[in-house]
Structure formats: structure tokens, C-alpha cells
Length: 230
View 1 (spheres, helix red, strand yellow):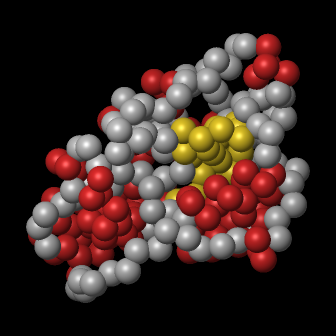
View 2 (tube, helix red, strand yellow; view 1 turned 30 degrees about the vertical axis):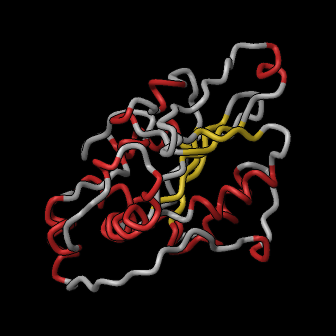
């Protein structure tokens, strides 16, 4: 069976690059911005001031002539999801990471980076083992449409130009660059925003987490399978 075909990139329409938290998005952002220096726009909630991202007027002459590349977090649970801001956009790219690793990395990052955040309710105060038992993956909240185990492949095929994984980042970016008609040099990839871990977590939690969140695991495995055939 051949590789699943995703949508063809339309240069005349806006593109959203979804930065799923703790999936090497900061490093990838620098690469994507180098591809589109004059069309690149960030979409991030300001945690220090609690300010929502700017909404770009996509129907303005400026953006109709030069369709923007919008890059950032799109968390619908916090009111700045794709359908809250840009329901008319129909083409996306993203990089995913193993959901279990994503939750662990986010735990350490938030504890380190949240000193000046206005909303401290999102900062975990318990130990890692207690946190992982109640934590929910935040991956699918950033996607453009609601997904379930029956439709997630259809949604990805309809809306995504390409989807990669953090664990094979250079391969993923090479594949994405080809779909976007850009060039990628792995030398330009710099790993940034890496948080040191100071608590171990037994591997038994990994299997339990996958069983608890089968949809997130299935979406990640689908993305992983695309890189495997590259």
C-alpha cells in the first residue's frame, strides 16, 4: 500500500503552521520564518500580560496579495484556537511528538518558565508521578477540526499539507520543505528551549498513558508512519 496523500499546497492561500507545545516548535519556527521572511506572522498568547494573539484581517488587500504564513499555538480550550481565529483557512502543517513525552516535557517547562505568568493556576505544584496520573495531552486542542478514532485520518488528509514528528525532525523538515517548494539545510536547525529534567518517571507510565489516550497516540503513530516511508 502506498503512502497516504495529503493536500497539495496552494501558494495563493494562507498557511497555518501549528506549533504544538514542546514539539521542537521553537527551533522549527526559525526555519519556517527563514522561508517566509516577509509573510511570517506569529500567533501566541502572552502569558505575562494575558493578552490574546492578534487577529489578522485575511480578507484585506494586503493579505489577499501576499497570503500570510501564520505560526504558533492554537489552543481552542483557551479561546485562541484555529476556528476561533481563522475558520476559513484550509491548509496546515505541524510537527508532533510522542504524547507521553510531550506531557512530561511540558511539565518541566511550565515549572521553569512560569515565574512571571499572570495565570498561575496552570502551573503544576505536585510531583511528576502524581502529575502524569491526572495530566491530559494538549495536542488535539491545536488542530483545525474535531477528531475521533473514526475520522482523524480523513481530517489530516483533507486539511494538512504535511505532518512530521520531533523524533525525526530533520527528515520531517526535509519532507515539509519539498511540499512547500522550499529548501531545507539541516545545518540551519538549532535546538532551543530545551528544559532539563530533574525527576525520573518509571516506563510503566508510558503504556498506561497510551491506553488512556488512544486517539492522541493514533494520530502520532499516523504521523510517524509517514516519516517511516520517507
